[in-house]
Image 1 (tube, rainbow, N blue to C red):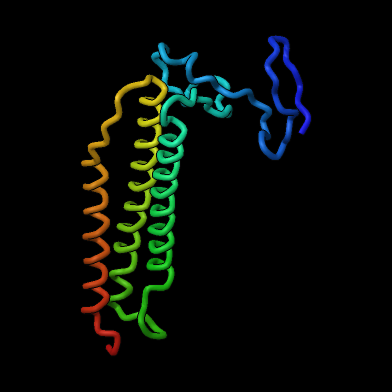
Image 2 (cartoon, rainbow, N blue to C red):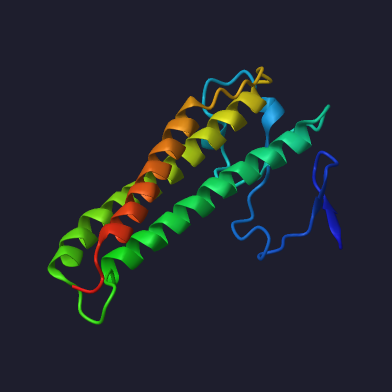
Length: 170
């Protein structure tokens, strides 16, 4: 891999459009510690965030990204379930009147839960990155996460009870 040397003597890898399509420079987080702006609104907007790797920072950032990706995966699963319920929610060849009445509200509930999980995951991720940038102590209380997971669990359990109580032979 060839490298180029910039004016200040920093070695940067050669431009690769597959890795960095907008050719943006990385954002050094240490320079934005005193800034009042959120780290995600620092220029360049599409630049990678570079943190100093002291103590267990790299492990913590990777854990934070994995948590966000888990929220994203849950959001996608709920969106797929929502679309499946709206498009084809019936137990037989032709849906009954009750199944037609239940499909749209139940699909909308799962869609709203999908968006809620996506927003909650991104908010948690951005809040944690901002605290990492400010070198603040991080305590994850998780009450919002518990509320979202409780609601998702109740809706899934209620849907299972609804599916079991609907008589597919009618």
